[in-house]
Amino acid sequence: MHRTAFMLLFWACTAMVRAQTVSDTAVLRFSGYVDVYYAYDFGHSADDERPRFLYQYDRHSEVDLNLGMARVDLIRHNVRAAFGLMAGTYAQANTINEPDLLQNIYEARIGMKLSRTHELWLDAGVFSSHIGMESAIGIDNWTLTRSIVAENSPYYETGAKVTWTMSPRWEIAGMFLNGWQRMRRVQNNIPCFGTQVLHTMPRGMKLNWSTFAGSDTPDSLGLYRVFNNFWWSWEGAKWGVQLSGDLGVQEALGADGWDSWGGVAGICRRRLGAKLSGVLRAEYYTDPEQVIVPTGTPHGLTTVGYSLGLDLKVMDDAFVRLEGRTFHGVDAVFESISGPVKDNTSITVSMAARF
Image (cartoon, rainbow, N blue to C red; front, side):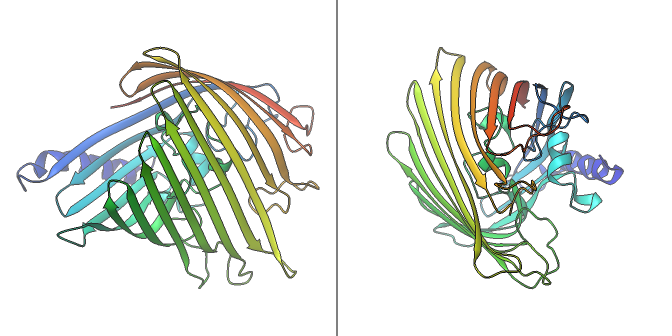
């Protein structure tokens, strides 16, 4: 982590003490998160990197930090803010294209309430993505590793967001964004927008629809992109089910028409006891025109995947997790020490805690 990042974190920590004298109505919260893992990839490449479309737990046969984070949150009745710094292989893989001084930023946002009588907020800065049912915080997800649809859609966004919580059941949001997982936008004049509609239903059900529209290419290319994500979840006393689907299109390079990609994921979780759960996942992803994942193969990244996991809840917000996962691609898109292959199998174990 850069020296400047440490200085900012020190300032945030000392501000926690000072804030108590600023206002009796302000709540300043300091928190942290650590996720350490070991992954053994049976088809690992010569440089021990995991498959190119995975950005979490992406190192082979070494004990490593996936994500370590320290953050400060400010909460008042009409103002909210968050600032978080991160390190780990997740940060290294996901922010590699950002300017150096921004690569350790997990979140940096401020929000102001726009109405006295309604939950209507305007937030601006770097914030978590509105797309998908999975996030960068591992213990908030049902599976240890992220699904392919989650790995290849934004984890974070930069821009301005208006959120209206209409009732305990309905929340809608609209965003003006710098791009598709960008802190600094590419040099173009095409604006990017996003929307989200979240419906919380009785009996533990949620339904979400998120969109993105804009360009993630320079003006010299000017390729417009439209993306939709849908997810549904249900959680009962013992069983839980999550379903997610992505569909995106982008203007074809050097030709009329549109290139498309998409994927689906289904997750089933069963509580086996007070502290133990089992998780099963099946998924499919296809990007034949290689809009998101360039492979140089005839069908691009077109693969099915399966995983089976066990989660042990040591205490609140502290887990030990084990997962076996396998992929089978149409083309030889996986790197191995013996060359490109169609299949990839791995075992990952993680210890993670939030405090």
